[in-house]
Length: 225
Image (cartoon, rainbow, N blue to C red; front, side, top):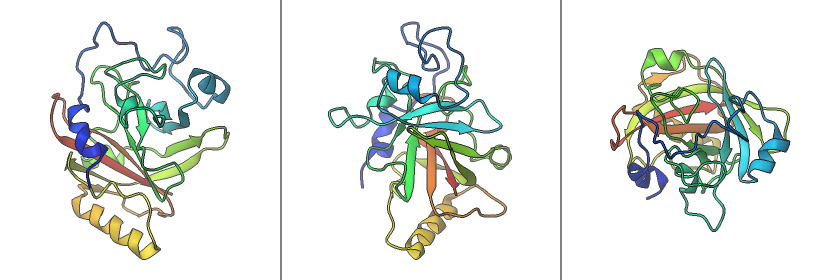
């Protein structure tokens, strides 16, 4: 199955310098707005109704909205546009268009920026290393309009080629089928939770693994609740 993860090889790059023309993704409403620390849905929806959730990773600076493209958009629209829908090489956190937050498994993509901890998924791009994985906090996902976050715990992390398709599975017919899928991911995992959390629902964060632009390796971090 082809999809964003394979096609993303042309878009997902780490950036070591800031292009002068790029608008800064961490600025929510204006240049004086600090990095987000929670889901202010009134402001977020005024900014862009395509924001479907707010993501926070405890013990890190990762605290950003998740967006999903419109039916008329390119399927990778928010990987190369900012929250104001303007072209921006930094992009935003984007939910895979083939799933939603309440699918059995949801997949979120983002770039990482080497010199800016507040942009993209830079805090997890080396999470395939066990010591980095063990330092991860819990993932809090607050769906649109909700005041109560869903809490996820790190399950596993791995580094894969951009063509890896196993992760592009979003629904399962049975608990056995889901367990078999998790088992397949475990085969590739270089870092795992010491005690596996419940896996009623899973969400994966995906970003490029390298400090060098144009590489094919991807970091996948799977969280479960």
